[in-house]
View (cartoon, one colour):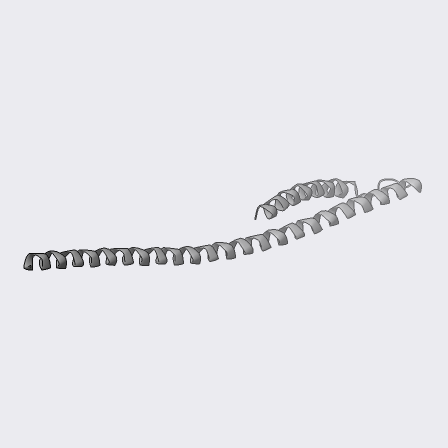
Length: 120
């Protein structure tokens, strides 16, 4: 009988040790899930900040493009009126060329920023 009792005790202790391992593993899993949730929250916050920054950047590029394009259009109109009046060079051709180049550059930048914004 004592052999059976000894075997029973050993089996009971082994079973308890097995439960401790299972509980320890469950605690480890819960801990990792909490870490993941914290990191996911950080990633989501960073993503939101990045998206806001890209939107602001995109808005600024759009305004810069519109301003450059408006200036080009105004210079073109000035040149047209100066020609109608028989006046010579208005002196704005270099500005017009520079602004047209900037407008084209801003247009490309806006497309890139728009694509980046959509990927976030």
